[in-house]
Amino acid sequence: MDVPDIDELVIAAMQSRKSWIAELNTDSYRLFHGVAEGAPGVTVDRYASEVVVQVFRESLEEDWQSLAACILEAQEGVSAVRVVRRGKGKEVLATVGELADRTECHEEGCKFWNSFGQVGNDPWFYLDFRSSRRFVAEVAKDARVANFFSYTGTAAVVAAKAGAKSVTNIDFGRWCLDVAKENCELNGVKSRIVKDDFFAVARQWAGGQAKNRRRGGRGARREASYKPESFELVILDPPTRSNGPNGAVDILRDYPSLAKPCVQMVAEGGWLLCTHHHTGIGFDEWQSIVHRTAAKIGRTVVESQRILPDKDFPIVGEEPLLKVLAVKLA
Image (cartoon, rainbow, N blue to C red; front, side, top):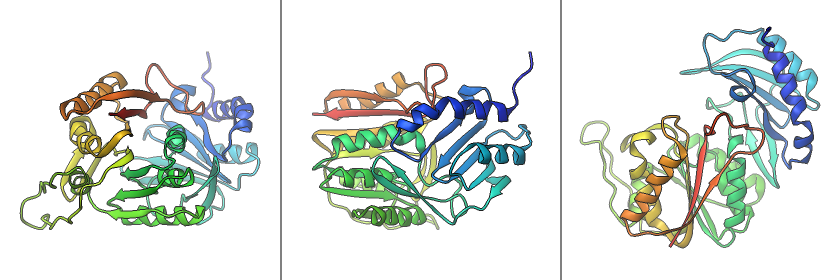
């Protein structure tokens, strides 16, 4: 039996999404989720008038220029398609049309900037987090919101638009915090910006002291001082692995140390919204880690919700790549 070409699979996936996309209140969505639709290692995402094809396998070869042209012809309102191979860096394999410096995208009443040509290896916001942003909108009214590993601050925008009392973006990346500020300005809302390492902020907001794990030498730094704070919604969305001033963090190994200060700073009756996207752990095991972390410091989980991605991210087997959990704490 002949295996369909990638372009045939992509066109079929786009056709199958048409009726659902017509009902979706956004112009940014996944057009092709290769691991579930016949071509593992390939994804196709639309961000308003631009499309990016991402290739995650070095050995995967295709006429990428032809695929880009095919998508451009099939997608009404698209002005450019770029194909990139992702690895340690980002290799451009093909481009059809002219990419803008940045593009204004729309999602359920909010606006977010995106760019495929400026700084960073990734798009400026993640489509599989859309259902989680929807949850943020549901619980953020009158809440104080802390958004850790905030990246470009889209969750904070959603919270502010939903009527949050205050929103704070915390990240160590200057460029992404600059975009977060611009996203707020684009939506006519405000946020506090904290540029610092997660542990330096979270441990002090939770009432403890930051522990600098780099002793002496060029890596040593004086910690900023933060007073304890509490929040009705804490968002914890860490990368799989990161290197900050306080040392490297691996979420497969270090999740309890990430979750503990976040649980501590959640106000009574508030929510912790957290994510995990490492394939080395299943949802049930990870949920148990979060629950045990809360129990060890005397917090009770009164409600626990699993948030699944929208239909443009079909699930293969039992687990989506992005695992999202919301826990309400007493």
